[in-house]
Figure 1 (cartoon, rainbow, N blue to C red):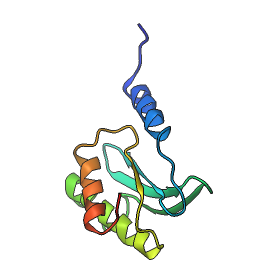
Figure 2 (figure 1 turned 90 degrees about the horizontal axis):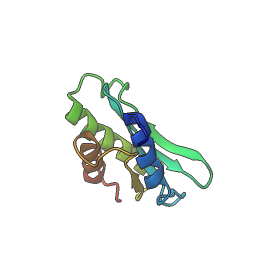
Figure 3 (figure 1 turned 120 degrees about the vertical axis):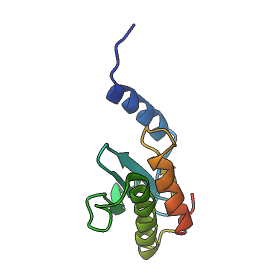
Length: 117
């Protein structure tokens, strides 16, 4: 029986999700990164390997917020920046994390701010 650590299991899930998802210029991939300290997200065009826009929890608007509120505000801020860049739709990449808690709050915040996926 192979021994796998928590990060190794997440990496396997992440690769399985990424095999099915590809971001384009018209519909970039919304990639989520979650840590114990905060959450971040970026819109990525995989065809040309370019990050369209990104938001990180270390920004001054998000730093002092509670975790769930921070995640929702991160999604809303990403959607605002995406609209400014001309992006209306995206593909959601949960990055191997469960679609629950802060990851779901980020997705809901982005949807409420007008980003479709």
